[in-house]
Amino acid sequence: AQSVTQLDSQVPVFEEAPVELRCNYSSSVSVYLFWYVQYPNQGLQLLLKYLSGSTLVKGINGFEAEFNKSQTSFHLRKPSVHISDTAEYFCAVSPPDRGSTLGRLYFGRGTQLTVWP
Amino acid sequence: EAQVTQNPRYLITVTGKKLTVTCSQNMNHEYMSWYRQDPGLGLRQIYYSMNVEVTDKGDVPEGYKVSRKEKRNFPLILESPSPNQTSLYFCASSLSRLRANEQFFGPGTRLTVL
Image (cartoon, rainbow over all chains, first blue to last red; front, top):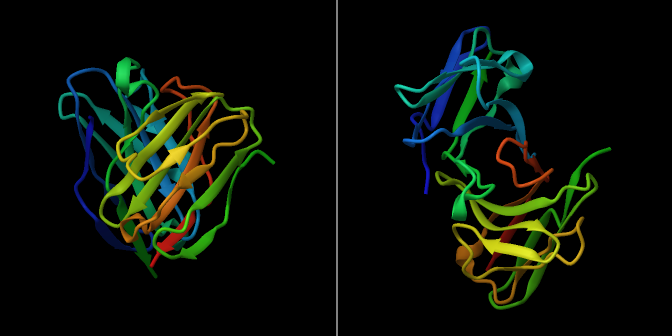
């Protein structure tokens, strides 16, 4: 199975500060990468995804992520956070479509971002 | 409105009492799956379905059953729930099994087994 590591379980920041949420994955083959956000008492929704092409991916709500193949990382960034960004963020990996991994999505353990006024 | 719905949203039950959590999507999606979310563990896939009458096990299928008799519905069945199945459950759907497709998630069902 794929392994997805989110290095920080909790990230507290003050409003308007920049933030980076880290994600590393283990794979020697090409994968698709996703970031999902879960607001309190809600399901997950897609923030952004990397399939191919430019390594800098822009998503909703001002978030962006950079794919780094050599470091097998896909860190999420926002230059200035708002209180409304308080949520849990999940990095996910989709391996190549073959055999038992067909259509599968593997999640990291999540990072709780808390934005303080 | 395009959505994935789950019912019930909250459920408290006792060990051994069979229960079903329903999941329905109105987007004509082929691919549906069930996840459980536990603190510090993220989301783990229980079962998935690539289309009607096609289901397969995910990473944590023990103690669960599913069926896919219609394209829109994908119920999760716990024949004999146990306390270790206390968790937050999410149903998700996507257009097809192609890995590029976004998965759309339901609002979640919080299950407590006493």
